Image (tube, rainbow, N blue to C red; front, side, top):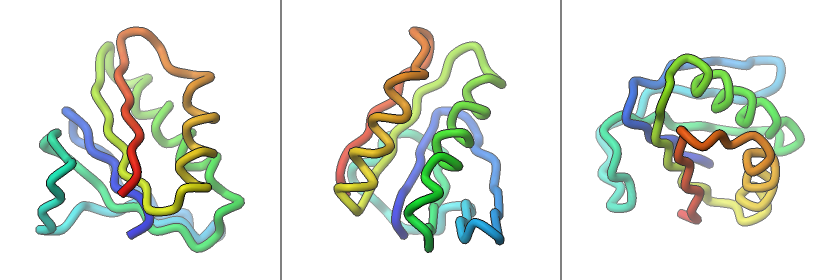
Length: 101
């Protein structure tokens, strides 16, 4: 997987077939860096569509007054891009941490 997104709330699954991005339930993998109970695995075939991941996170946050989110990212270029995209939209009641995997 390219990205793992964990949260203190249940995360929705999404399939963006034309954009080649799949957000599906996390399996039974144990990742030591994930400390939140719910997570999804993200597979990205096209790195130019990272705005979809940022939109997914922002849409998720709009549903709740307060959230905690952890992103574990394999690719350092993807990590930097997501940090830039999400840093512009973080609200004070939502916590996001983005770390390399």
